Image 1 (cartoon, rainbow, N blue to C red):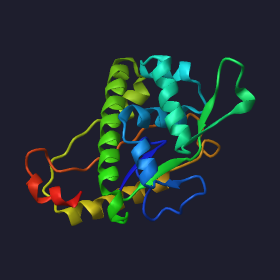
Image 2: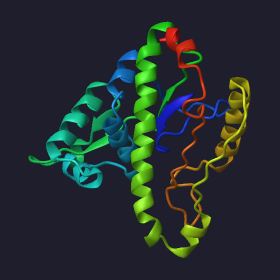
Image 3: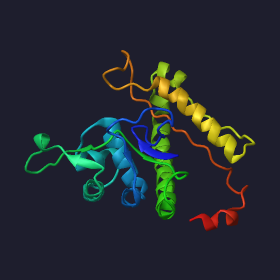
Image 4: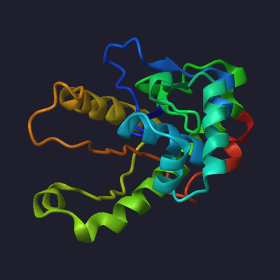
Length: 213
């Protein structure tokens, strides 16, 4: 399962009850999100709350015109909404319309496969970008956050079924630690947990899966 969430892009645990603000991505929305910068704009709104094109441009290192364009595309797809009470004549504020966006390629209709693969690639590229930005802050992190943070990589011999079971087990753990901002304990900060499991590049016969698109 691939998803773009306040995590980023973490997935909704399969056993976690769906909440009203989660959205199951259809083909049209998958196409809107098939762009890593657009995924990061949406993630930023979910992690930081309402923002403007100028603020998003500063955060992501892009020009305001580009930020405005991606915001309009997200709004047209129903993924973000305007916050009129915070806007002015010159500045529009936007917020995410959902807590997270969910796409499960194992259960989606056949016609979504191509759009789903493009979306998944965009999510992976967006994760790389966020990890690079996080890496720049490592030397400046307070000791308690530096000592608690983890950047690990494991090489495992697994079947697709093994990966599926492991993913479900990891999501069960994540669900136990998932709090709303109001429920978060004192001293808590937003933490980005990236969950990625994929074949080591160059080790899988890609031709065997090409007909699945």
